[in-house]
Amino acid sequence: QVYLMESGGGLVQSGGSLRLSCAASGLNFKIFPINWYRQLPGKEREMVAQITSSGLTNYTDSVRGRFTISRDNVRNTAYLQMNSLNPDDTAVYYCNVNYKQRGYWGRGTQVTVSS
Image (cartoon, rainbow, N blue to C red; front, side):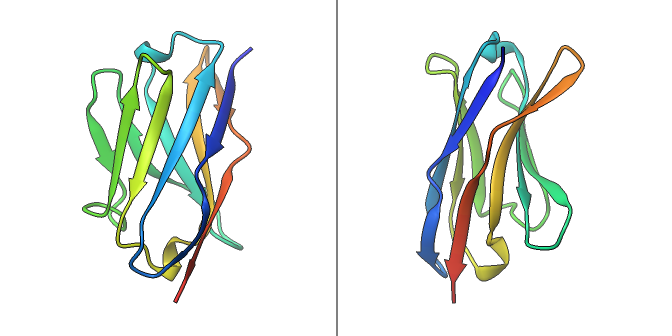
C-alpha cells in the first residue's frame, strides 16, 4: 500500500518561507515523478510543481522563481521550499504520485500566509 504524508505547513507572514515535506512508503520511490498540488479555498486543486525521477523540475507560472521542489531518494521524501510567500499562496498543499495507473495523495498540510 502506498502512503504519502505531508508535513511542514503552518502560519507565516507575507514574505516568509516554509519547507514542506512529503514522506512516501510502499513504492520504489526513486523511479516515480512526484507532484505537489495545492487547493485554494473554493477552487480546484492545481499542480504547483513536479520533479521527475531524474530530477527535472517544472513549476506553475505563479510560483516559478519562488518555490523549489527537490527529492531525497534515500529518505523517500520530497520537499517543497517556498520563499517569498504571499496571501495568494494560502492553501492546502498535497503531494501526489501516480503508481500503477492510480493516483495517490496525502492528507495535505495547511499553509496560511497572513498579510
